[in-house]
Image: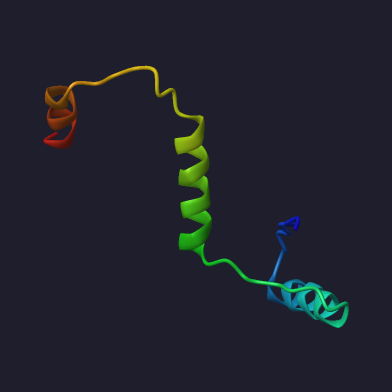
Length: 65
């Protein structure tokens, strides 16, 4: 299964595209802002350099700022 993401300019265009896909018997799903952020964070995590190690002390210093 493939996925297509479509950004619409407004609600009217969103419903038009959704209705068209529905008539073609293609499943649709509207993502919330939080779900879109989660996808972005996941992508960043997958691209992160995991070869570098950071000490616990360094992490705690950053968190306490």
